Length: 117
Image (tube, rainbow, N blue to C red):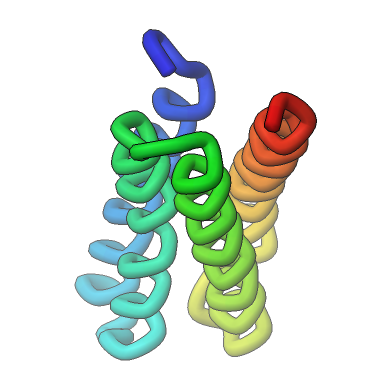
């Protein structure tokens, strides 16, 4: 995965999630949901990075699938934060759409790798 768009986008997304989490803690005094969002939102890229050194294609698929699960969980936390009025519709939509883009890329990467087994 040299110079991977997915790797770069997931890292940039993690930075945005860290900043969103910080703002939730500092401005809204929200600690529990923001921590869950921080954990799942940053795990997406961390696991993609881990997949770079997968021991096999099956291991790579497994790691990318775990990253996909973390991305899906991140959607849940974003929805919950929006529906409990911790984040605005605009902030939700911005982060949600970026995350959906990562999900689409992860699905594509998994499908491509499976087709090459």
